[in-house]
Length: 329
Image 1 (tube, rainbow, N blue to C red):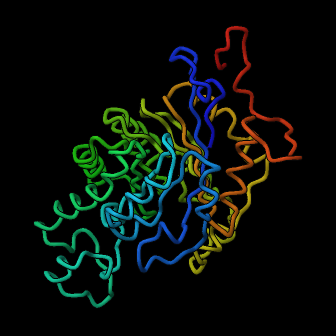
Image 2: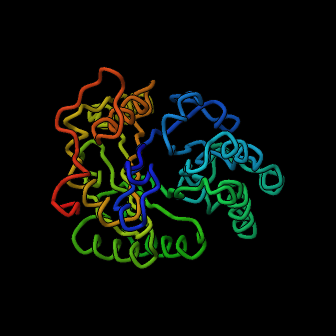
C-alpha cells in the first residue's frame, strides 16, 4: 500500500491530492478466529511493508475484543484494518459452532450444522450485531479502522428485498465506513445499476470494484465511485477455469498471480478513483501461498512508490505528472 510522497512528508491539505492504499488480505494465524481454515497466510512480520490489510477471519466468527486490540496494538499509527462483516449479516450461512455460546443455548443445532440470519430468534439479531460492532471498538478507538466490507453471495441477485436490505445496512452501520461488494451480474444491468448506485451514493457507501474472471454471472470490471470517503478495488485473480467449476476448492479459485500488464490495465480506473475520492484501497485477495503479498508489493512498484532492490518497472503509473499545474488528468 502506499501514500504519495507529499503525504509521507506531511504535505498541506491542498497538496495532498490523492491517497492510495495497496495491501493484501492476510490470513495470518494470529489473526484467525478458532476453527477458521487457513487458505493462505501473510506472516505478521510482513505487515510493516504495508499500511493496510483486509481481515477475513471476521467473516467466519465474531472476534474477541482482546484479539482485535492486539491487532491494533501491534501496528503503527496510520495503519488501517479493513474488516469483512460476519457472514451471518451478509446473506451467508455460518457454522453453528461459530455462534456465541449464549445463542447456542437458545437454539438447537440444525441437522446441516449451519444456519442463516433468518434462522435466528428475532430478539438475538440486534444483540449479535451489537456484539460484532463492539468487538471492533479497539480499531475505531485507536484510529485503525478502514472500511467494513459487506460481501454478498453470488445467489443474492438484484431485487426490492435486497435493496431494502442495503437501506437497512445504511441505517445500522454508522459511524463505520461501509463498502459493498455484489457478486451477481443483475446488479449492474441497465436500470438496476442506476438504482443500486444511487442508493450507495445517497448512503455514502462505497461500491467495490472487482478484478475477477469474466463469467456470465460476474459483475465485470466497472469501477464507479459512490462514496466521498473512498473507493475499493479487490483483486480476486483471473483463474477462469477454476471459477467455472463447482467442485473447485478455495485455494484453486484464488491460485492466480497477476502480470504487470494485468495490473496496469487498471490505470484509468485507479487514476479516476484517486481523483474523485479521499482515498482508494487496492486490495489483493488472490490468496494462494504468497501471491497476494507478491502482487501487492509489485503494485507498489508499478505505482512508482517503492521497488525491491534490482526490481525494474516499465510503464509505471504516473501520479505526479499529467499537467503543468500538477492536476491528475
